[in-house]
Structures are given as C-alpha cells and as structure tokens.
Length: 618
Image (tube, helix red, strand yellow):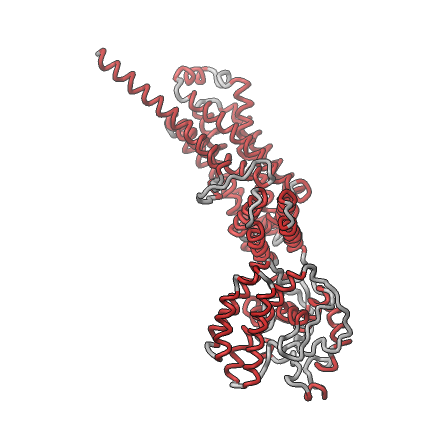
C-alpha cells in the first residue's frame, strides 16, 4: 500500500539540522501542525480501511489522537474545533465511514486555514537548485539519487521510503502537504519533524520532489501563481493546463511580480493582527490602510480586469477589518483572518493571464461601460447646442472632452508611477466630486432654459450671445469633468489588461473608439429631432442621476484612503450605480435624490394652485 502521509518518511532522515524558529510565532506553527495531521488523515484513511491492515488502522488512530491533542494544546483557539475532531475520532476508532472522514477532514482543514490566517504557499519562488542540493546531500541514502527508493537500506525500513515516480503515491500530494511533512513529521511513525531548515529551504525541498519524475522542459510554462502551484496535485495541473505543460509547471518557477503586492498586503495584515492583539488599535488600522494602498492598489487594475467580483470582495473585507480596528472590536482578528483568506484567493488567480481575444473583448466592454455615461452627456450637450442653433459653442464642448482624454492618455502612460496607492483613490474621489458639482450646475442650467421661451428666441437671433462667457466655461467644465473620471479609471483598468496583452488592449481600444463614436453620432442625431422641452427634461434627469452615481463612487474612494469615515449600514452593494452599504455615501445620495423630487413636487403643486385659481376666477 502507498502511504501519502509517509511520503517523506526518510526525505530528510539523515539531514544534519539545527533547531531554528523560522516560522516566527509558535501559534502559527500549531495551526500548521494541526492542518498537516488532518491532511494525512484525509489522504490515508480511506486507503487504510481498504487495506484491512491493523498496522495501518493503528497509524490512523494515532493521527486523529495527535490532532485532538494538538487542538487542546492550542487552548481556547482550538476548543471550537474539538467537537468536530471528536466526531472524526469516534469514526476512525471504529474503522467506519472512510469517505465521510476524508471529506470532513478536508472541510476542517479549510476552516483551520481561515481561522489561523495561514499562508499555504511560499512568499518567494522556491530555489529548486537549493532543493536539489539538500536532497542530494541528505536524502539519496534512502530515496536514491533519482528518487525511486531503489537502494538497499530502503528494503529494511517499514514502511519503505517513498518512490517519487509512483503516480498513485503522488496523486494526493501537493507541495504544501510536503512542506508540512518536513516541518512536523508524521505522528506515530519513525518520521520525525524537522522544523530546522528555513521556511524557504523547506519549500525548496517540497517543490523539488515534484520535479523528480518530470522530463526536462525547454518551453515556457503557462502563467500560474505560486499559490495555485503549492496547493495543486499533478493531476490538478494536468486538468487545468494539459499534460504537455506539467513538466514545465513543476520545473520552472513562476515570476511572482503579480503576487508580490498581495504578499505585501498579507504582511501588513499579519502585522495588524499582532498590533490589535497588543491593544494598539490605531497601529492596526494604519497597518491595514498600508496593506490596501501599498499592497492591493498597485495590482488592483490587473485583478479588476480579470475578476471585478473578487476586487469588490477584497474591498469589503478590508473595510470590515479596518472598521473593526477603528471601533476596537474584539472581532478584529476574526475579520483580519477572513481578509487573509480573500488575499490568498486573489493570489491563486493572480497568475492566470488573460488571452489576446479575451483582452480585446474586455477592453471593448470596459470602454463601453466606463464611457457610456460620459459619452451620452457629451452627445446630449452637442445635440442641445445644435437644437438651440448655437453650434459655434460646440467647440467648447469638444475642447472639454478632448482635454479629458489627453489627461486619461497621460494617466495610462504614467499611471504606474502617478496613480498608485492613495494617489489613485484621491484623484478618483476629487474628480468624482468635481464632476458631481459640474453635472448639478448643468442640470440647473438646462432646467432654467427649458422654462424660458424668451431665451429660445434670443438664441435664434443671436447664436452665441445668450450663452455668455460664464456658460462657455461651464460647458467646458461639464464636458471635461464628465469624461475625466471615466478616462482615468479606464486608463487604470487598461494598465492591468496590458500586462496580459498590450496588442489586445490596442485592438480593443480601436473597437471601443468606433463604438463610442457611433453612439455620439446616434444620440446627437436623435437629440436634434426631439422636441426642445423633452430633450431638456431628459438631459436634466440624466445629469442628476449621473451625479448621484458619481457622488457614491467618489465618497467610497475617499473612504478607502481614510479621508471619509466608515459608517456601514445593512444595504446592498451595486458598484455600477455607486451604491455601497455605508451611511457616509448613501445619505448624501439620498439627499441629492430627494432635492430635485421635492423641487418638482413644489413646482407641480404651485402649478395646480394657479390653475385652480384661474378656473375659479373664470
């Protein structure tokens, strides 16, 4: 029978090691130790039942006994898991329910990782040459130079050392499981724990083991994150990327640039946990702010381009954890560990590059999504100027939106340097508030014109005079501010997509430009045919609705840099509409929504009163 749990039984058995505390806190080691034991049970228990070997069953009983003791040693942190461990132990002691035990162990591992805020992958790409050197110096006596365990001493050992070329034996193994084995050994067996190599050296050995049965590779492997590699079996990688790519995935470590920002964020969150436990709530809050601005923000464009839902999940986890720190909540550590799990989820997907065709479509969709509101506003302004026979003023509108596009282009070129961290959120927030002000000005301006027939006559007689210099500046400001925020945000998104395919972004931009131009021409033509009063009313509603959306987004951006406090309330999140479950954004949006409705109600009531008076006099 093949023993996944004993896979590395003699991997480091002859290693001349000295005790070192490379994990840092002993608390973290306790969580990893419990996880490691349950991983052995998950993989080995069904096989032990099938073998009907008393030796194997005794080994499994020692595993679960060790796990239960480990949870008790963790004090109150482990107590929450004792009932589930006791339930598993009762079945293992009776030799029952192999599939249920394996399933429950796997579920418990996931919950332990979340509760302990554990990292299941290395922080740096493992040095396979260093892993090879350790293996050659310390492991060949039992496993042989090629890892097949075809050496004389191996036949005298019970169980025999692992054959790293055995497909069945390797089927349930991941580098993370191998990492835990080298650190903690296998309870109840001759495999001792070796927490004596540095963390990176243990990862190097764990990853090197997986290269032993792979042929040489000269091709470039698919883009995969370290988080995914560390927690995938060979079969998982084959299913995701094909048999032809397995050797390259195991023999060539990925570039961790995409993960580095998320690892930086993870370090800061771990620091926040320690500061919170020490009673330093302000320090914890600042560490969380640094985690978001210095860790997540630099890679957010890439993450948002690949998974907008994940970015929203990250933002929520950060805001919840920061709020717990600001309120000195006893649940700070729980929220922070949930945040760590979301960061690791983001790391798993950070290495999955998007293909050329997907980048083209994503770019097109982003341009249409971000440019729709601004394009409709600009087109509506042009249509109204044409209807009012003030087409000479159109050049002011064109100058406004073209200037905003120039700023967006500069943001795309210099975005990585100028729009990182707090700079990005601050610019988005300020630009959003500026746009809100200009859109409300435009709504008031249009509403006034829609009720002034005399003004219309003057426009027909004098194409430009009625607009005045102030209105010229206003037209420029409306067009500029309406487009500015969208172009800057679009530039940031395209920065992320360009990492996957710069040519895809270029083609997507070309297609998006054509689509938006067609939209402008369509709205401009339709707007010219609409009745003036209808056009003004529809445009006024559009401007006010856009202002309400941008107000929510701007305040949310300023919350992320801690310039606006957090006041969460139970509500839905609709990012597209700028709706977030926080009173600091929802209340201003509600007020801004109510004001025009109240004004409309007062006007209609006044009109009804005047009509009633006229009827009574008649």
